[in-house]
Amino acid sequence: MTEFNLRVATKSDCPRLMELIRELALFERAPDEVTVSLEEFEEAGFGPHPVWKAFVVEIDGVVVAFALYYVRYSTWKGSRLYLEDLIVTEDYRGKGLGKLLFDRLFQEVRELGFSGMVWQVLDWNEPAINFYKKYGADLDAGWLNASLSKEQVASL
Amino acid sequence: MTEFNLRVATKSDCPRLMELIRELALFERAPDEVTVSLEEFEEAGFGPHPVWKAFVVEIDGVVVAFALYYVRYSTWKGSRLYLEDLIVTEDYRGKGLGKLLFDRLFQEVRELGFSGMVWQVLDWNEPAINFYKKYGADLDAGWLNASLSKEQVASL
Image (cartoon, rainbow over all chains, first blue to last red; front, side):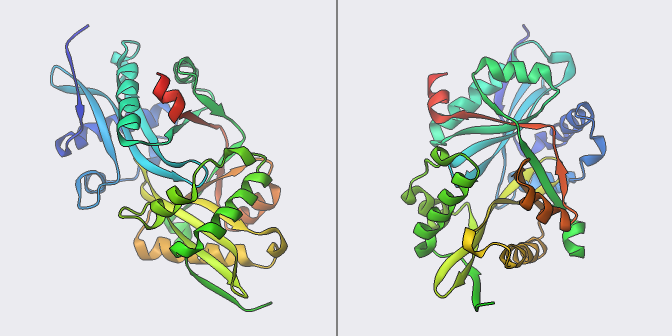
């Protein structure tokens, strides 16, 4: 395999990360759902109150995969790492980059003392589900994701 | 209706909030899943780096309902209010306390400029689903909740 570089994301990675986020949204059949701007994304990661952190895998100077997380608070379990996105660009799938990022996330959970890690996966995304099952992850059906947009809230 | 007091939760509310959290876990058929300690819960809400905030409804000096949220970061939508728990103790259901708390959350979304609010609901919890539908909330099936506990991560 080509030489890779695993590191924490910096502000200058943001445009490329947003490209990959759009690639995933397309795969998840929701390309129009990405409405956050680059400016907001940068501010949220590198402004005065950072809310997310990401690890990137770089090959030949190009970011080809990343994992982005924030801290979620569960009234059952306490503070946990919430894996918002794990993305490997199409040409680099099946080469172990997902495992590399997962290992880095496990290290983060241990180092920062989180009570575990959580994420969501679409129920038809078999390759991802199989990958998660290898780690013995618990996959829980039966919950609906509920949401109200800013515009809906403004009208209520 | 009896006189009520809607206010932001303080540290001294934590023991009562945990009672209500256990009441909800029982209703959600997962009483053993509440493993967070009172000390961790207080620290997460009122320590040097607070991660959650809650609104409580008090009647005759007793907290009978509350809504607890933290900020979640979506790479599609930006920062949103994540409603972790909305609990009305059994004797006080159907009296409009849920609506009261929802209105307060909407105010929070508007004041803090969140890009919306999100939460989860069990797909068999009809009363809750009907309540959310009144607001036109989007209810999205098809996602699995994945998790690895601290102990699992330690063993990987």
